[in-house]
Length: 567
Image (cartoon, rainbow, N blue to C red; front, side):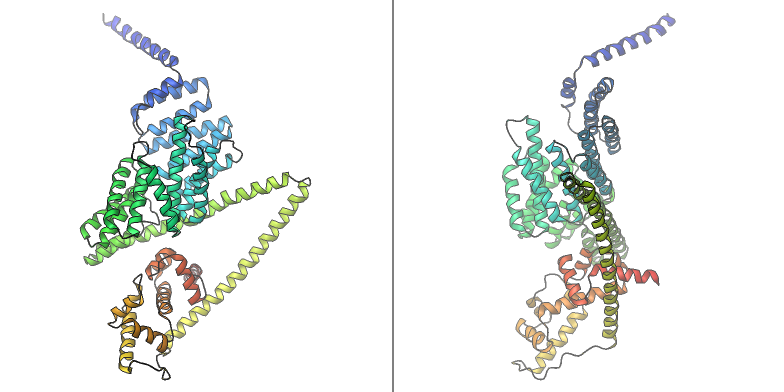
């Protein structure tokens, strides 16, 4: 009896396996798709049917179906590592197929995992560029514009908002034209997703470029078109986020909180931690501005927790650490202040490294690729290809030597200006020129009032109150217990300087000295340096630095670092 059981159990197992195999072979790709389509994203219960789909495609050696199966497996997997493994498998199969569209699609999808799931922007860009390279001649315009969209995302992250806006304008136009009731519902929905995401990203570019009317018009379109639904929940959250930031700009903090909290709950569920960190940062900032310290700290610490857990940072939220440092100073907690200062330095270093590498890659891998393609098309249109190609090579060589010569010449000029600036700063320390005496000025104010204003302006300078942003003449007058007319008169007639020029010089002199004396400042980005000296953005900062010092701040920092490296 015991021997009979030993024989029977394996036999029943073989019969069951054979039955399952026959059942699997009878199921079509459409049947299997219907089975796993019933499950939501990241629900691994669907993988039973996806694995059957993959096995069927492998057996029938259908490359496109096999890649589709790996894409579905990536969609339903919870683990990011598994998602990446499935994406790798899809790339391998696509390369075997030698189908340019399949190869391009597989690289793009692997890049999306690196960008959105792993926040590895460098690897994401590599994949996007490979996708673009293989899609040059594609007839699949949806695929082509999808790649353009993701390249726009990288450019937006780098701060090239004008260039990114061109990408998003093109993709928005394409997707809007292809939203049609005549198409299959899935195709129409994909185009609608593409359109809404494009106008949202475009509105963000306009905000960064301070083109607020254009931003507001796109947010208005999004608000009208996106009604909350599960299919468009993420787009709904994006536009709630945009409405919140818009409300902050307009000073409507309670309205901003309402929109941002709506976005927060959805983004947390969708696990979009980059957008969630940004929303939490703005909620922290609102509460900070309203004086709600406890609420502010809750949100600011949430941002810090997300950045720690997922190991990323973006230029928009790096200021989170400045607020935390401020609170640590306020609480006189030196340990916590040092902790957040180190985090700020590390985050700033990550951004500087990313910006340097990604900028080089995107211009050499994308822009140059486009130029080479245009050149090749031009060559094909002409009869004398060899002559033209030779001419191009000669031109490239000449251009190379021209830029090499200009670069060296520019470097000599920069070195000269840097040395002149150092001499100027040394002379300024050795002897301070007194410009306060001006006996020829006819004044409606007595000498005692004027001397008091001068004395108080000196205190204002010593206390570094000029570092506060958005300072206006009435603000300074109030700080020194005077009025704007007297202060304006003293600056113009006795100190021979306008108010705006006065602030500009104080701020640039301050940050120049800091860069020279404190090595920590050499590690800061231009945005951080601008903020440190009370200026609104890096472009204004750079222009003012050049005007006062005769050299751009980027060149000044580089020269100072070179000087320290030699010593």
